[in-house]
Picture 1: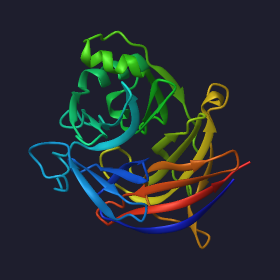
Picture 2: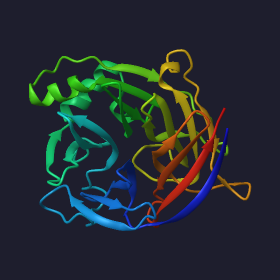
Picture 3: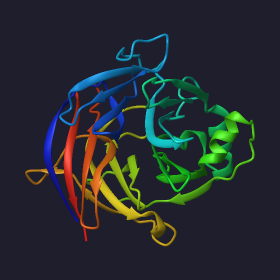
Picture 4: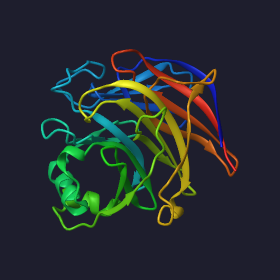
Length: 292
């Protein structure tokens, strides 16, 4: 497997944390704002969508009060397209919000509180609260795949059960757990940071490594990597083939937060990656991944 960085540029989004490719635009979320930034494929901002009435879409919120939106995915419901955004759940205060945003002209925002849902997931999958940190979300085959950076696990819930939990107050759902094994990056343990699944079931994930002993404080960035695996292969092989991002032979010291698939076939994938470098400008990378 080989990876080539085709282009990189500054992204006009504070603390970019997730991205989806939809109708030739990138929908980018941030972990310290209440907004969606819609950008063209050159990274230029074309539109802002506000997620909360109390804040402007690009207003930066201090760490202890932010919603920490770390994950998003495209879903279809009743023949319409939506962007589902979820908080990380890494703190009981503020970080259990979810937003369902209509991608039609209305840009209507529906609100959910994930506190009870996340608690049910943790109990079902026996994950300690201190190890819970949802960093990526993907939809495939009528299921939602929650990627927990705290344990490098995938928590899988039927999409129907997710919405029934809130809309019908049906709390009885099952959560399937898959443990992943990721290679270290420059000697530092890596954690899942982003994920996307193609229409034919190819999972592309990003991972990043930073020298910190918890999921709240930032640390020195060691680098990031990209990996691929067929969803159908996860049951028999939980070690994902990963390749580190490098520049001139050196590990690229950037924290990739999300991966979005632009196009993919059986030989290569064109991807968009967004990075957050903890206080510095966010970046957008266009890369090509070649695989066997």
